[in-house]
Length: 310
Image 1 (cartoon, rainbow, N blue to C red):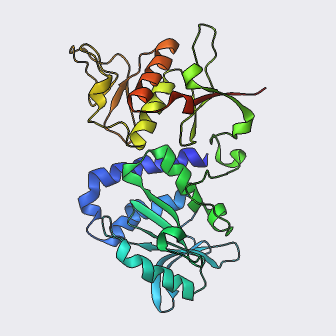
Image 2 (cartoon, rainbow, N blue to C red):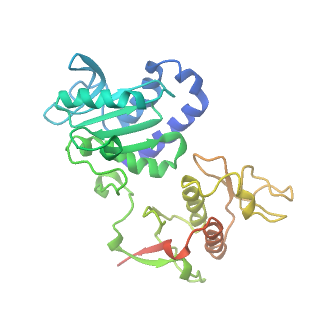
Image 3 (tube, rainbow, N blue to C red):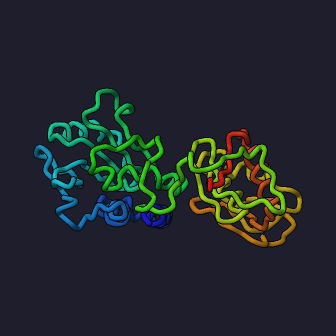
């Protein structure tokens, strides 16, 4: 499934950036092999197939690191590669101008961590022409994956990509378990949701930014909420203690309670330094989810739980 594979690659890239950053910052080649090529590959841009990707593509006497070809083998986008950590801003204007002269509709630039994509022929400022701006090392993998689907080959080569700030519409039979269409679910605000003994697990949780996530277990309510709050910068190492008692942590940087006891069911949150004590009943899962969101200043009526309509 594309989304699952994409998230797995993103997790790998996060680890490489964290563990091998100094080595990858030495030059562009190392960055391309370790960070850029793997992401393009999972997005179905086979960098070894010249009918799909042409490296060192000539753009008016200048070499573009990658030309991504459409079905007629014409460049639909160029991608400029820089070594990890190199500033991208000073290269943007020139990169877009070269693509403009060559008649190429989209122009991207990346250091393997930061990925940006621009509409070449759209009038306006660079900000107005920007379609994608995401940093792999600093965001939640699920949200990154949804945004990076804009670069998915069937999407980008079609010439009809959508703004990355909008939900990316992809056929579920192709990419697997993506967020559902809202109309197919019956939604209830978390503020009014009460878990009884016979209450069935909701199928999805929807956060205030519109992102929807499948639920596989009751404690996933808490785990996904922690992930989302962290990705939005609402939960940080600075306020983790707000959700602790003298005896017990809900979420912490170590799987040890203040009492000295180990977490009974520790769950690490990918892309973050935190661990959740996930030993919850359905009642505790709902209560703790509400506590986390309220404690981070979120309106519980704007968080919804969805059950698929029969």
